[in-house]
Length: 72
Length: 387
Image (cartoon, rainbow over all chains, first blue to last red; front, side):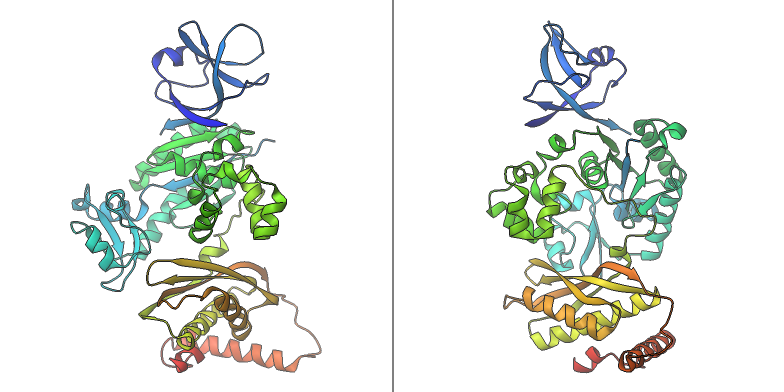
């Protein structure tokens, strides 16, 4: 079980389904497959996006989002 | 309903308040400390901390480490006034607020989302209101309980907000260094590190029973905490630990057991006086002992039955002290904290059976009245008479 931060850039914020915005940092849990309904950071081709996991598709899972850090 | 607790931490509170009063201090290393050379560091700005100055250090040591630092005596009246203004803002967001200390507190935000929106939006509003009204910056931690929100705000630091989603407390806490976990004090952190437990996640490699056998109820609490469990409620009053702390910095450092026990009695008297003034009875006491070399040990003692009598508090403290004072090293500071209290029964007994206890109670109340009227010189403490 390991945790890391992933800065949200403009590209990822556009693919974040409203869950994060540019400048935020996502707290990512790596090393396990997401469960249904969990917010996951996935890689589809060259693009990274955030979406609620439903166990479908061939996306590569980067990690599960466990929290968010935002500059106030 | 999903529980949401916010932990609000004012960044660099003491130094920031001093900078508000004196803008010339901006960008400089500020150390808030008592008068030299025996005074202790109350707080240090980020710049001073970068040079190795930490809370509890003597002023002379701090000066050696941070020669260019500005040393400012603490202005508690000003700190309290600014703190009241900060908590005044927080009160607009929830009726349940706990002030943990002058610069940090908890908000029970459960159910308040309908009024103020998501915690991220509420955090932003709180930050801008506090900045506008006091000029201070805050960090916010949001989580399902007090413990995780506290760790989250420590992670957030410097005007950030960290929101830990419910159910993910365990992976969030796992990489946190064990000495930065709020449940673990300095003494226990080094012990755990010696056992190979350097991160919070390492605790969960063992079973809860092992921790209970080794450390008692604290071990159990640590294990549950590492798993992200904490059911303590947000209490609207100031945390008893903050209200019921009595400490004495020894002048000079002492190693004589008799003299230290005399100091302990003075602390017991001070604690008893505070308890009686608030009509509370102590159930357990925590004794903090800091040696001259900076090492600190903490011990806890439970009273045989709840009470506020100086002698009974002293007997409990003396037992804890005997367990803690194991090194022949001079002691710099002793502090007593009432860790658990209960209200004093209002109804008196109609027929007094324990005459001696009733007389003692009457005597203590009379002495408290005298000390309140003539703070120094009259009704000297027993501990004072020894030293």
